[in-house]
Image (tube, rainbow, N blue to C red):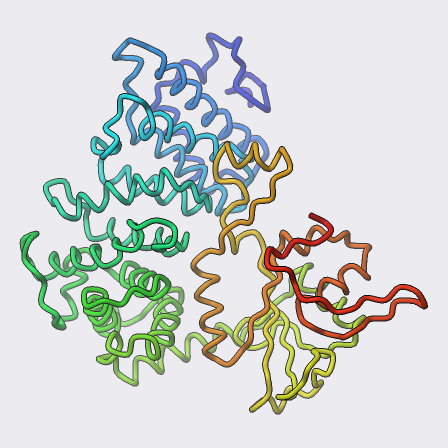
Length: 482
């Protein structure tokens, strides 16, 4: 705070000689990177400092856009993307930076992508590959669905996959794939997201086979060490398997790459796979076994059983219910709906019904026999299951004026639901932005909400005159709290 002249909410416009104003842009980015990369952002003072750095960066960008001086207009992408990455990392570590990352990404959009004199076809053509990847990672960590910026990044990336004169490393391609899957960007969001997985897979296969850009890769299994020798280690392999499974685009290039990923992972020269990587590989294997069997046809039973064992060990650990899970459980107890908390496969609240049950309140207490029964997984989805509510300044203004914006579900949640459905569960989502609107003391309102979400009862009699009759959720899922 002393470094920033003691102002805790914004950079002081009147401070012409403060240390922060005298820092170079590189100094600012190095400060931000240092704090975020060393996990030193867990205090209010550190958070304030990071907000100072971001706001000073935006002030300079704004001043630069209106300047005729080449020196003042020269802002390096690497400096600004490093600050964005630091803010995104803080968000992923649950440190609060308010809306400053949203505004910084908007400033990047205005400065490079949508400014009048930019090359509208390739506004980021002068950026280094590392800068494109770092900004994409910042958006992913911060859960920002700023579509214009994401589209510009992936369109530039696609051009460089085609023209390899300024190409990405194999590791950078895997990171972009992970970003797309993490934010669950598909062809429904933009055509570039529909074509990128196949093009990226093709590019990786070309690198692995030592081919030139226009040569088509062979659909064959390569020696297991090839991926590692081409810069795709255990982490990159697991990320690729997970990402391509989330995105569900299984053409020949994707299928061949997945075959090589699993072949390389099962032949790990290090002799041990990190748990996180094993879990990613198991999720991918389990889904692909049904959705794209060719992708995992070379995987040995021994390795698939190893992955399953590691997955079951993780899911069998003792878990602590969150306060919201407990609130849902307490409400179901009031409604006399039998259930279990933190059940197998990380199910938040599990309900088991007789096969022909019409209402959820007939759920059985005995969970020893669930074969042939209808299994309902009640999943509470907190903020980290979604993109942020407002990913741009325009969204923030709309919300301030009373607009309702529904965030998009992220890739890891999409994949979890697919896993549960393949294991025979019917998934019922309880999004935080619906449940949290109901006051904690309004137990009857919570019962009404769950009655509609879970079809618990035809009628709930609260008193002689207060009766809640079942009504299905409306398509937009709005309630009287909206």
